[in-house]
Length: 144
Image 1: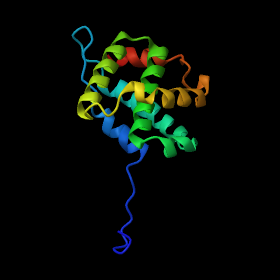
Image 2 (image 1 turned 120 degrees about the horizontal axis):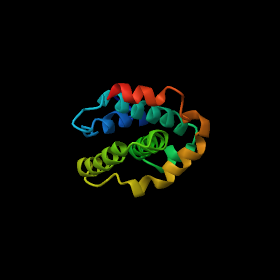
Image 3 (image 1 turned 135 degrees about the vertical axis):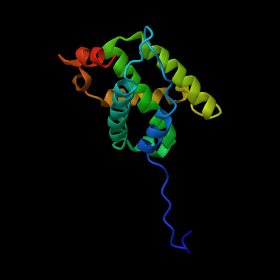
């Protein structure tokens, strides 16, 4: 590759986040389909935030695969949303998502494998960053 002067860069954490989020299952709530994009976008934005935080921790890039860091970012996003909204649907979606990721990656990505990354990311995140806002419930209710 050097002779050909090719510069090959591995996929970024955010690229893996986008790819993994494509495995999100579709869901319905009481026969209604909540606006999939509302929760999907929230998962993406929070995961993106965590992927940016991960850049500041050198041991993530030295000791872990980029895909593992991305998976931990998504699991952190699920945790944040569950704490913020307490929606049972999120737990069901997360469970199906984890099963889908495990199947699609031939069990190469498992929650137990990224627990330490996830814990470290949550410690980096200021608690008030994702505190519940006044209009948050309205936004979710209006999207259903």
